[in-house]
Image (cartoon, rainbow, N blue to C red; front, top):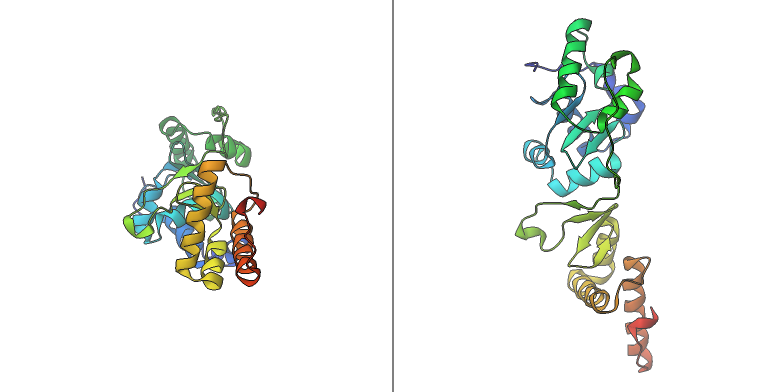
Length: 233
């Protein structure tokens, strides 16, 4: 393991890197320079460790690694990461030493990310074989450790955050609801939808639009005095 990881300064002009948010840039630089890095760019590291050392909430780290960081692949099943352009941005070294390090990394870290490495660096993959990929790769929900400040939010389903047991909203949808309805009303509507889905099943394509529709129906009821039923949403 190297004691330092210099990165070429041209990374700041890389088109993909320029599009990153501040959190994305910090995670990327951290993943390229922390003490666990390897010559191959594949190594084991938990999202909890990334969160603790960067100061970025773990739920954000999980979401960015699952959906938002181009040129980084993360294997949530085995807690392994592959920095796809690591060899591109790392300052050189002895080709023979790099080759041996890659072979050692391959033996140490059992992850299907090696398939992407072999595809990207065929010239450096001599002796490496493809690794079986999980059947449900990419469709597994990600469990996140959270504290009481986050209440019941904490499981990512695609790009959405879970609220209570059954309601899933994008972060921007959740913030829009708070902006339009206020925090108290938003939590009240989420609780109502959660209870309804829990008893009747989830028949809704968008929980965000369902909540807005229910609020509209409540307003119509107040204006007309006509009783409405949430089932019609």
